Image (cartoon, rainbow, N blue to C red; front, side, top):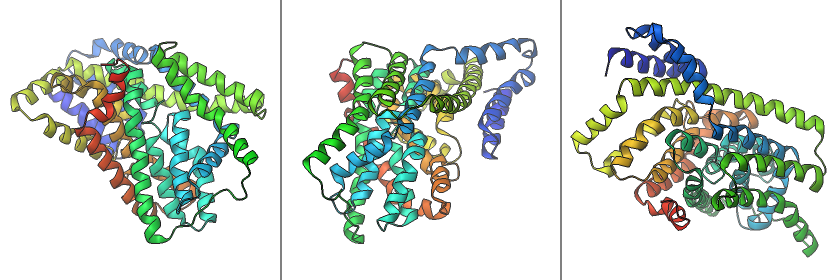
Length: 433
């Protein structure tokens, strides 16, 4: 490893560690390489070329489209309908609203594909609803941010789309691989709630005085949201459309629901949604662009091949290597965001593990679960900060209340890591080997 590469890596992690904006840290570290490495100043046009080509990928178009679809579904009140449907399913049990929180995130995850979108859309409603029912505000917030972790693991998933593009892995296969692990995260969280509900005598909160007509109304109102992930996943798996085309279908479907089914979507809202989508997408695309430069630098310095040779020479058992990589991702999650970890490390580790017999679909699920769990780990855990901003609760109190849920997520991560069938059974059943 050259001195220049050591400096670039140190500069990147140093800037991130001391709170520099992610876009600036990655961009500045990549640009500095061309001035530090001897003979690279004349090759500065490569920087501009890699920035452009990093964003010039058809599948990246699916990200703003999925973001827009989620924004539309939130704007037309789909969150309230999903929560009512969740209350209908699990509200009658002790700790009913806590279960509703998890089930609501599970269902909304099939619409937005993003954890922070889940918290932004469902958080204000869920937290306030639980507080009115007697739950502590810090517990309600901790559960809300913890349940959002499962959203991007359950398809459709923006992190899986990013991983697919970086590693040339089938996005449909990744979506299928994440389905069972995502559901397992939800079930693990509900197991924690079950124990807490018994000890803390949590209240039940069913929808009162339900007639058959009311039940039918709640189900029919939620059907539009429940159909969306089925259309997306079914279309991708069957080969009717690609992931990018599926995202466009999702936007079109959301518009139809808003204009024709619910009739509560206006042109003014569309403009506001488009503005928010552009702002969010722009930050993602800039990170992608500058991370592409870093990936080129690592490849130019032959780091992936040197790392592969080092691992091969050390003869490390695969189980130990997977454990070390999990720890690596979890530690990085303390201070690096989810998309940054994917962009920097997915192209680096995927081919190395593939040579050792780890299926890229399996590793994709492991990595996405790790970076999602990182949203719950301070000091960088963005889900915690967003939850604190919504609820106005102290961050420390939310962190303490989230620890049991974090532990449940880590148990599922270990199961998924060492039992490949959990993530590979569905893809193989549909022919994604």
